[in-house]
Image (tube, rainbow, N blue to C red):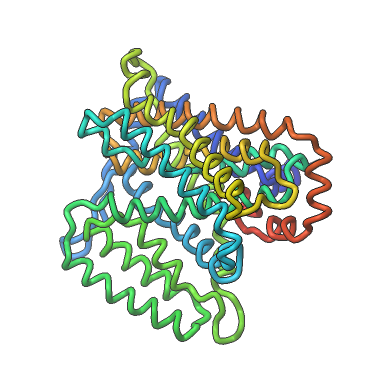
Amino acid sequence: MSLASALDRFFRHDAAGGIVLMVSAVLALIVANSALTDTYHGILNTYFAVTFGGEGIEKALILWINDGLMAIFFFLIGLELKREMLEGKLKNPRDVILPGAAAVGGMAVPSLIYAIINWSNPETVHGWAIPAATDIAFAVGVMALLGNRIPAALKVFLLTLAILDDLGAILIIAMFYTADLKVDYLFLALLPLAGLWYRNWKGYHRVAPSILLGIILWIFVLKSGVHATLAGVITAFFIPLKDKYGKSPLHAVEDSLSDYVFFLIVPIFAFANAGVVLTGITWDQVFSPVVIGIVLGLYFGKKIGVFGITWILVKTGIAKLPYGVTWRHIYGVSCLAGIGFTMSLFIGGLSFGDGSVYMNEVRIGVLAGSILSAITGYIVLRSVPVAKAEKADRADPHAAADVKESPVIQGGSQ
């Protein structure tokens, strides 16, 4: 087999996105604790400016990555949310009840655990949302490593839960991580927003003008004090699902963008944000309230929230487990939901600032909690007999079709 064909086969594998993400994180750890550490942090803190007529944007490279590149990540998440709401797993409210409630529980309990542990410190309690998020690329990647041991209905359950988890994270960012609001820029943001609405209403086929309007929207939102990544989500919701010719600009953009996001943008984010500096770390830092709150939130909070809410809804008759899915499957998924890598690091940066003394503790907590959750989830799901998964897929072929059609899975990951 040639190198080119081997690489093509790798990038087509469901676990590829999670593996690339993990490699990026490991490289960040190695570089941050090597002779290159000063270069690593120096480059990330180098300022770049884009100005026009004396006005513009000046940010450190780490912020261009977190505010700029991650806006593209959120743009893809927005496309996925719109597609699922209009024609996918979120279209039928009945299908959303169980994973939706599990997603809410999986965000609320970890946040509560972190807040209780950090309640006495007004500086660190601000990071209550850090363990609330689930990293879809890692979670689906770990599940993909198990192959046919996992029934397709369980994959759909995890995907739906993770998509709704992302929606919850977007709402949290919008409501709780906006500082120094400048209303004049929000009013200016209405201009590109109106253009996006008009193009969506008319069903124009060309996407480039909408992307340009989205960039202008991003600038105004950034200047307003609202986190700029939300502009990516808003822009996505105004990309037409169907244009006036019956074609789907949304599907075309989502399919063409997913590989770039999961194999380039998210790994760059991981490399820039996962560089835990181990030199000089004390036991007080390892067992600080920030680290303990994140680890307990991700490892125990996610399990309690996801599994607990699912158990209550099923036992009370409000919802039913997906066909062929056992309680051991649900427990395994609740473990995988504790992998909070990308979104948790992102929210940590919003909570404390990328140069904060607490960010190293955030990275330690996120990495430790996510690794423990991934290992536990893998072991639990691997313990389920393969025959059960195969029997469930034969009895429920529609779930398998939903997984195969998911651009997220095809993109190598959420």
